[in-house]
Image (cartoon, rainbow, N blue to C red; front, side, top):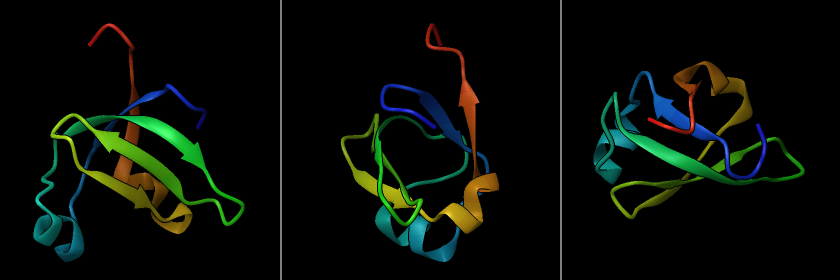
Length: 65
């Protein structure tokens, strides 16, 4: 995923819930690091990276949503 892509959390791990995110939350990709972690600025104001191996926990959404 690229900077600026809109994503939606499709499933929340225990860590995500503890951090205050739930399935359905949306955000914007900030960057993807050299390990493949996708760093997201969630619309709630939180920032949390999604580990590449768990990429199926997020999906791309149209930018107009």
